[in-house]
Length: 445
Image (tube, rainbow, N blue to C red; front, side):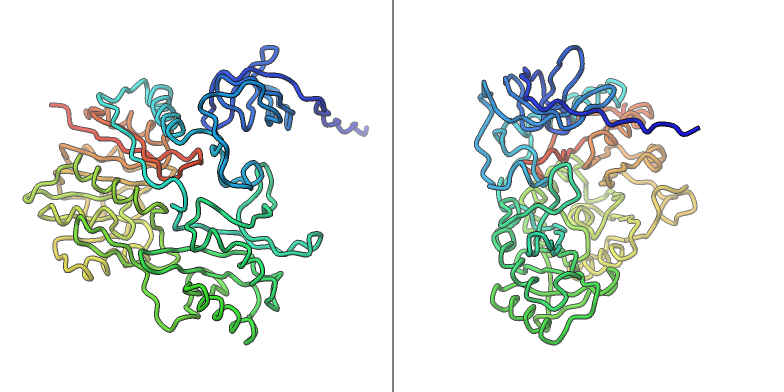
């Protein structure tokens, strides 16, 4: 017997009125209509808005604000002409000072609901920096759209897999963000304009680099156009015909990407595909705060987990007797060693290890450490954090890009005899809902 296919429920077409009670962790206004929660994009707490439904689920509905009847005092005019279409930013309509406070509340909410009700003894002042042109690392999509007869370059639309039709990006560094139109025209003029899906942005203090991913070979004319674009705009051009290992320099003949940490007299070298923090001003403040909280002493051994290319490891080595950095990506382990040599540091070791696996057989595991720092990916450090008390460290600093996994892991540390002394947020990604945070744990006496 054939079953009838269930018809998709038709969404109401007429706008409806709603009072916004709060802000969700995704940056949407939260309203209640007839006992059901509605998440409304583009709405702020305290506002009266007219909204249209974009989805209806069993437990909640989703909408987008089409008119603000009573505006919140926290509302500001979005700077970017593409706000509301591009999915890169969600909070440009909210005053930046209120954005970071909302992120702080998200962190505290996660400690409460996921971390078993943990409350930091001290909530520190948020770290803030540049609001615009701050982003130095990004991956932009590129696509020829036949209907538009145009190449698009940039980020995805909200609630869509399609690229947004952008001409600029105000959160990208101006060296790239104000050249979106020029990049569209450049790709449109190549013979393989429809086979170039991605541009990687990587910036150091002195060098802007773009990595063009291409699925078919470039002609000699294509190579000339790309090199000419680099010369005209002062941008180093890299090509990527296959995986990350295939990345190579097209123009100029030599290129060195680096950023400086002047407080520690360090220069950090990196490759275009390496992970680096997107916001250089916040990165420097973050390192300073982490080291201030950890307070490494000249006679102490320090462990840096998920150390990357040594962003925290080498500054710690300036203050400690010995530092061990552990990282899962072999490429970054090698980069860490290169950076130690480049800066003349001999009191630091780098090891490669999968930190999601049993660590007892690792050569660095048997030694005790006085202090520990960890900066894991979004998935957190649940698999390794339960072993940290075995090292006997008096202090642990946890840098997090996901408050949910920070809270989860914090509960483990607290249950193992540590106290959450301090916590705060850092505005690494202004105008987005991304929450970067830092927490200090001290061993209970």
